Image (tube, rainbow, N blue to C red):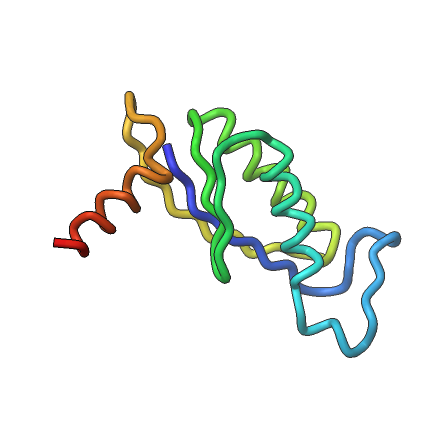
Length: 109
């Protein structure tokens, strides 16, 4: 499966070790970076864009990484918004790149 997800904390940080300057409170880049770090350390195929992180693997391993990334982002706020979209296609791997390759080939025609 491929999951595209984004996390965004809001509210005061729930973790006392997390500090933000007054000018940085509107940004979630530190929380997003912390979540993306979890994804990248998972070793699963992944890609991050301006709005979503995509990760590919089987159901249990992908959902575990999404949960851990969401928990990590949660340290930066009192609540977390999670947006998740999944493409569940049993028996297929390498689709995080394969889907894009097919689109690029179609555009080249």
